[in-house]
Each structure stands twice: as C-alpha cells, then as structure tokens.
Length: 243
Image (cartoon, rainbow, N blue to C red; front, top):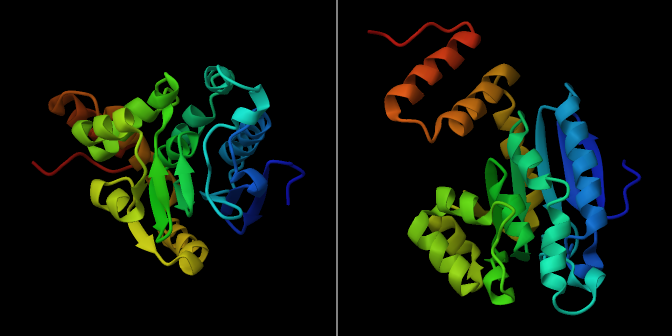
C-alpha cells in the first residue's frame, strides 16, 4: 500500500488501483491530491509490471470537485482552478499507455468528471450523479471538460451540460456516452476489476498501440488517419490492409 494521505495506490497483480481517499469531503480535489495523483500515475506509467489502471473513490461519492475550503471564500473557485493547472494530472491520465477504467459512485462533479472523462472505460454505479458547475462560478471547465466532453457525448449535449451546470443521473450518462455500463453499487468494484482483467488478456503492445491510434489520429483527415493506422500496425509486425 502507499503512504499517501489523500489517495491510496496499490498493485493487485498486474492492475494498479488508485483510490481517491478523502471521504470526509467526498474526495474533493485538493492541491495535495493533485500532487499525489501525479506521483501515483507516474508510477503506473513507469512500471512495466502494471498492465492497467483502476480509478475509484472511497466513501459516499467519487469526487465532489475542487476543494474550495483550501482557499477561503470567493474568488476561491478561480484560485482552486489555477493551482490545479500547475501539474497536469488530467493530461497525464489521458496519456497513459495502459488501459484505464474509472468506477464511479455517488457524486462526480467538476474535476471528478474531468478525471473520469480522461479514462478509457467508465463504469457508473446506479447511484452515481454527474455535473459540471464551473460556469456558475464564472469559470470554464478547463482541465479537459470543454474538450473531452464534446468528444464523448457530442458537441450539443456537452454545451448544454457545461452551460447549465445541472446534475444528471447514471442513466443519462450511459445514454450520452459518458458511461459505458451501469452496475449495482455493491457490484461496482468487482465489475470494474472483471472488465480490466478481460481487457489485459490482450498483449500489452497491442493495447498501447490501439490507444495511440485512437488518440493521435482522431483529428486527422481520413486518408491521413488511415495511413497513420497502417504505420502503427506495422510497429506490431502486422502488414498493411488487404488490397
């Protein structure tokens, strides 16, 4: 087990498990949590024995968003957002070469949604609820929220969620693509581990290269993207497409 104070990090066989561990604040995202997540995710990235990452939350919710209590009163929200950008947890999560899965229960707001959106697979417990409240604070969701959400749920739905800041259910998250499956709260941890165990039955180079293909080629014109896909396939010793 780790010696962190706001998260825990443990290896379960080939799986790295990061748990947000500030249950008294519904795992509100603090400066120390940011720093500890960077350390844990760097360990995952640099450990060849870790084949997948599971991200989950302790207590009654996944993450209630930025911990505004660290910064006093308004404009604490702006300060809270600014300090988060000093170390890029969200970019590091999105760039990991191993498959990543978020298991979400209870409240998942602001920074929590951005962490979840940076993962490859997202499971929601039936009690999960989501929201992006930043515009109500006079801010934008600038740790991936305005860019990742449109890619996952579509531009129109993302704009509505970002502009209204409203809370929405696991059922809506599933219907719009933010969640891949809803499971009973009591089964969430086991289901998440089962998904990752199945995923990592595939060879690690194939999984990492599939992630590269999707993430690096998505914004290219189709002809360039298909050529890039073929180049990446050849890195695995696979020939080009049948002609």
